[in-house]
Length: 234
Image (tube, rainbow, N blue to C red):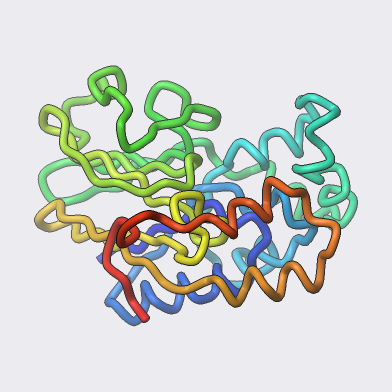
């Protein structure tokens, strides 16, 4: 059983809950699909990923932090320059070595792990209502594609491929009160989106970082009209 999580964005408490939930549900291997940093000015998630020896992918926020190629006016929200200054040289080098995609052998084929999409593994956005035909991988052996980046989880089949956006464990944008992770059974190609409470972590982050950008506070404040997508795990 594989566990996948993404888009922690410095929310260490939510990240730790996501990892604990995946392990409690039987995950034997855990992968992180990028964006350990951004928005919340801390390197705590990167430190924990290294300590836990969790395989990581580079997300768009890691890529922007390393290259410094993003609009200067976005720094107020992203705070990537501030975060880069906190990183020791060895951790910065480690993050720079994260791949942009990973292929994992599964029964009967392969699973592709990216942050964005098969077309653009780092920066692309695949939403619940996106046209998935444009993202079908050229490799016919790929049975499943796992993505993050949009902070909005879904599971949909297109052709012979199961597409799974695993959402965000630390800064969900469909419902800011429920983090999201994914449990995947490679034997039968089945995936489950698991949701867990993070509202209290948002309250603590507001207390610790009173200067968080309004966009971050807005994301935490959002609530879905119905039940959040996935299985609610209290």
